[in-house]
Image 1 (cartoon, rainbow, N blue to C red):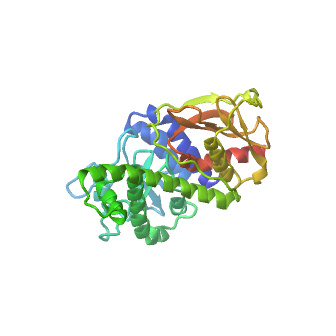
Image 2: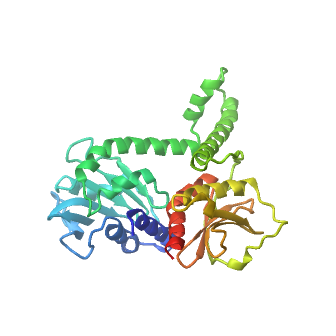
Image 3: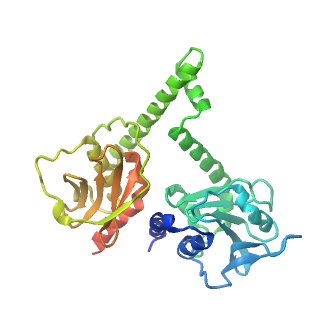
Length: 368
């Protein structure tokens, strides 16, 4: 299995099991050990490669342990500290990492809750762990640009020097991307004030702030939709206009799973296909075209959902778009047994978060 596929498989496991994991030990066993073994490629049962409960007895601090130390040629290279999956990560959780980083040969420290992995090094002060991570990997929101850097830490192609050399740029680019993402989701007053000053000459009063906060949010949504539309035109040579997105409800917390029913895809002439369904189809098609020719990816609408199929065969569903509900939209993804998991999405752009799963589904049909 390719590195990206292993990452996607672990992400799927985290997505399905996260709510059932309540303790730190369960997080280690269910998520962190598989990450060390399947993603980084180290033998978690070989003490020459992975040392659990690593103890270096720092100064007056005795019997404090880091959850895992990864060794290469008997030297510590990575330190990993784990927290339970239901908790958020803060720098206060990394006290052991700070102490152990300075007394070992490790150049990389990792703080994780099984879903999010924060990677630290010593860019600011030599041999002292930075306060801010240079790489943040969220298995439920994987940034594909980080995968090559993550791969450099795996056993087969371990290249710590290359990772450290790229760390400073990764640190600041990643931080800027997260800041931009936060502004897109909920524009801050400073951001609204900055953009307003470019188009409005009057005083920035309380009333103006309220008016332009709504306008900035709307402009950001339209800008994002237009960028997606441009990418699709480039990828497919298609010519269509994306609909103006509207504010969406908060996604429901539940994720439904069900087997695919092949017989329910009838060609009912009374079914109305929406422009939003067609745009979603174009996104799925653009993703699938990395594996097959575009003409092999087709759509077929049903009363309750919109299906994307390989070779117009209802036994080869690539994905399903559940867009009929006004409250919440879902993307239906298929596993090897054609069981469907419905993932809540806030916007059409969220389909891009599932590139690996969609392509893996297409590859399964090709291999069979």
